[in-house]
Length: 102
Image 1 (cartoon, rainbow, N blue to C red):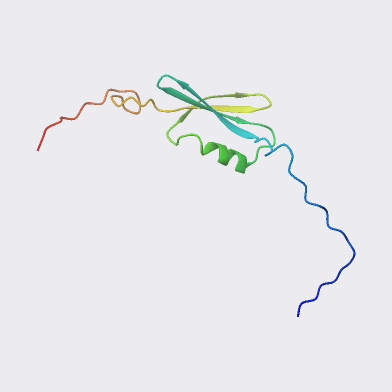
Image 2 (image 1 turned 45 degrees about the horizontal axis):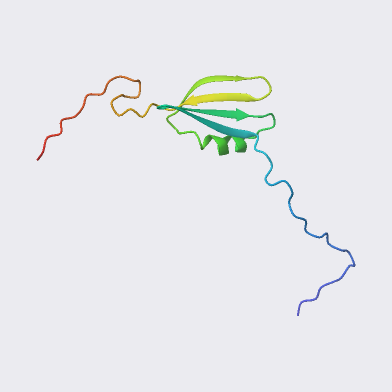
């Protein structure tokens, strides 16, 4: 048999969360300009490694850092490799393979 003790203390009523989720201290803004895609990672003071990791997952792993700037907030700008099938990773022409039939 289980017994409980009533100490007379009242528990606080649950309250709804107001304002939604707190704003992130790390966010990614993506800009599409033709075939070029840039991702700007913006870090605000107080951002944790968890904030950074959560935001960085939105940046493709092949994107390269092309600029950075900031005073209070820090911005890291990454650019995706163009998706032109006739260009290699460094922009050099890639020879086409023959389309022979078996």
